[in-house]
Amino acid sequence: MFSKAFAFLALSAPLLASAAPAEFAKRQLDTSSHCGQWDVVTAGQYSLLLDQWGKDGATSGSQCANVVSLSGNTISWKTTWTWTGGTGVKSFTNIQLNQGINKQLSAISSMPSTWTWSQSTSGSIVADVAYDLFTSNSAGGSNVNEIMIWLANFNAGPISSQYGSDGQPVPVASSISLAGHTWNMYSGSNGANAVFSFLPTSGTITSFSGDIKTFLNYLVQHEGVSSSQFLVTAQAGTEPTSGSATLTTSAYSLVIN
Image (cartoon, rainbow, N blue to C red):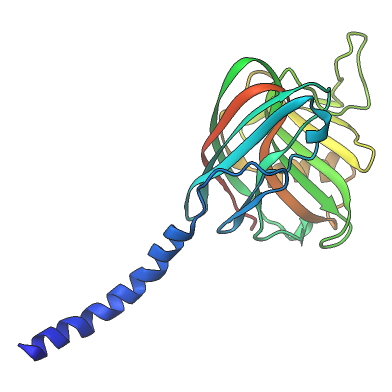
């Protein structure tokens, strides 16, 4: 009787031990709501950044966000915001990838990504939903180029060096086929570095699946971006200027190979 019980415990111990880390990690995932201007929540290879950098430009408002789940490379999260007053962007609440960055563009073979999201709004809003990448001349160095891939444009507009008589930005390249969609590309400066923005030629993309590296390849081949530059930041989120909305990402993943 004793020997059987002892044997059972001995056999069970490794199983319990192997299960413990996974259960512990699950319990440790912070899914609570965060509303601080610079709050950061770590979730595996990702960080949720509140990044309310333009908050002081609002007459009133707030934004909160939380991680919902993490399974392997796929994370889900949501953010709710209300901003009133001012004309500038109030925040860029986003998911940042912390694994595989600071590689030279020439050393990156692919960047497969998926992003499935939905958004509910109250009245008219000004915002975008976009990937935001930065490159530098050195690993961890100062930003030289900002590359944005917009999946949605809600009454906002990209940075552009050219504007038409109607006040609308003028693309420097049109109808570019990349990652299964067609884009117009705009270029300009944010005062600190060059900005390249890819926007869908029509509508919004609420379910994206493609290789982000193809956008970088395009800039190397057609816009003079050097392949010796380093990818120092890879983020995806929303830039609200005004209004009220909840952005829910049901599945997001990004891997740098």
